Length: 370
Image (cartoon, rainbow, N blue to C red; front, side, top):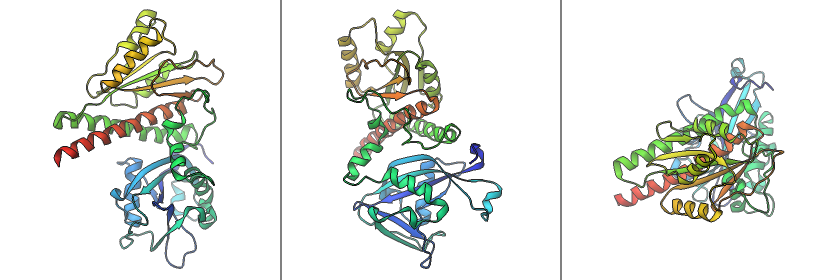
C-alpha cells in the first residue's frame, strides 16, 4: 500500500443502527448476494459529515433529522480491483466511517431515487458479518464493525460511551497513563491524518462563526472557552499550542504563550478571561509555583460558574515523569510522542465540546421563537 495519501480517494461510509440494534444493509438489486453500507466520495466543497449526510439521503432516502451522528472512525483504506475504471487515477478509497443512530426502530426508507440500491433491509447487528460483503471491502468492514459494535455482554449505551474520545482520555487516578499505541479513533498513519485534521479544523471554525453570529444577531449566550495545555517536562506544549491554534478561526481565537519569566508565566494562566465568542489557548506548567492549589481551584470554579468552558489537556511523553493534574475540573491526559495524533485528540475533543455548546445555543434560540 502506498503511503501517498494523494493517491487515495477521500470517501465516507455509514453504519446506520436503529433503536432495536438493527443495521441497515442494502443490495444493488434483488439478485445480488452481497450487502453494502451507504458510502461515497467527498466533494471538494463539503466536509466529511456533510458528505455522509448527502450520500445517505441519495442512496437510501434517509433524511438528516431521522438520525444522530454517534461516532466516527478515520484512516481506513481498501484498494480498487484492477478492472475498476477509477484505478487509473486512484489506488483505492481512503475512508472515514460514521455510526448513525436512528431515532426510532426501522425508519421508513425511500430507494425510488437511488442510483445505487434497489433493496434494503434491517438486520440485527449480531447477525451481520464481513462475509456478507464483497471480498475487497471485507477487511475495512470488519474493522468498522469491531469498532462500532458492542462486545458480547456489553450494552450499546456502554459502548457508545467508550466511543466518546472525551471519556477515554478523561484523567482518572486509577488509570493515569493512556495507551500510547491507541488507534481506536484513527486507524491510519501520519500521511492519512492530513485530510482528517483539516475536517476537524473546519468543524471548529464553523461552530466559532455560527456562535458569534447567533450572539450578535439574536443575543444567545456567547462562546467563552479557555483551553489550558499543560505538560510534563519534554511534552512540547508550546509546539502543541501553535498547531492547535492553527486549527481555529484566527479572528475568534487568541493563543497566548508567555515569555520565560517565571512570575509572569504562572500568573497569566490563572488570570486570563476569554472575551465574548473567543477561544483562548494557553500553555503552562503542570504545577503552578505561585499559587496554592486552593487558589487555583477557587479561580477555575469561578470561571466555570461564570460561563467559561474550561478544557485542561495534560500532555505526557512516553518516557516522561508523570505529574498529577493540578485541577479539580475535568481534564484529559493525552500521550504526545506522536505529535500528529496528539493534535488530533485535542482538536477533536475541542470540536465535540464546541458542537455541544452550539446545540445548546440553537436550542435556546428555538425555545425563544415558540
